[in-house]
Length: 252
Length: 288
Image (cartoon, rainbow over all chains, first blue to last red; front, side, top):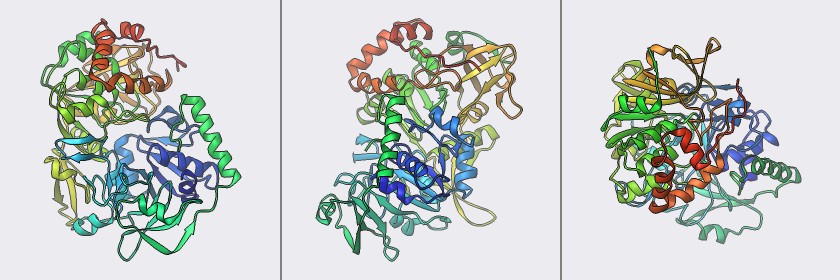
């Protein structure tokens, strides 16, 4: 999953990175095929090149290895809202078939939730200001759901329904990368379609791990197996991280 | 001009029950010592403001200091949930907690509007999000020039903003470096400002474009070495990840939480004693 997500990032692109899996994948990309990818974290670090994965979005490692460190209002206003970000690379607690994201509440109501999640963070503006968005999360019926309890950050459906006079800049969440495969939004309907499966996964398994009736692309691909170089780079990154933090941040 | 006082005096004099208080620090320089002092002094009915409520707000909420929380992301970074924050929202323990929830970009904009003397912040935000349905402070406004619809939220003006910084000079000028987060905006938006620092120096030796809070925008400076622990102070000590992981277990149940807080925070006189009591020694990595 981390390797599949890393491959998706193009060298030289400017990437606004979420913590956890997106950060692991973005740094793996930087350490393998995309040495010139520019990683921006919402703590204000631009061009961060961490040797170990950060445990929090504002670890000192990010500041020490960045090209520059700016304030939080600056990162959101000039760099994100200003249209400088190519790719938003995000995690989520739940998504639906149109790439809408929930990171707010599960079950009950907003005022009396069954489970209170951390909340929005930077995502509501990242999904609309970045030119394109990829979402990374593990796939099962609790994470890929028919209907979200709360739309924290919008995908396609909500946008087309409610965008009104608001100018949208990016293409939205075009790609979902899970531990089972890759889903892409169908340009005609905006619905997420399974386009690739990771080695050893079958379509039935993906369907059974999805809360909605999942469409499968006619030309379904199989993700190429991880190369020795990719695996070595990922293991080294996790080993350095574990040694530094005493934990495996973002480990799969 | 900032006065140099103890944290106990600063908290007692400047922070009152019912105040709106922003303890800021975007994952860096989080003013833990100041939060502990407010807990010790049993402040109540505070409106707590913070982009990223993490362990210190979990502690303040669990100890009953807060009536309201204005925020944009509440979690234990890299670890998981904040159990006291969740308990307060889900079950109202130890007291009901009203929430006013935003996105990061919006919170940053609200502070910036406050610092700028503007009545509201404007941004491209919340397109398609459910947050505006549940937060009446999030409204929309039409650009008078282009007709574009933008999000608008009121400026933040905390009664008191509390920050931790690396150092101050004897006049009370404060230098902040590394990830500076929202520190400057939180200070300039507030009516009163308390800054705890690692040390007082003769000369700040600040680079020309450094983030400096001049003495005359700061109410009080308090020397509290290690005062950001378990977060970090760039150039002084690293983040104590082990403590953040341990907090998940300590805070999971009300009883273990209360016992830990009673012993290490309520049962200690100040942050230095807390550090000895909890074993939370911030290891200094370098000075300058």
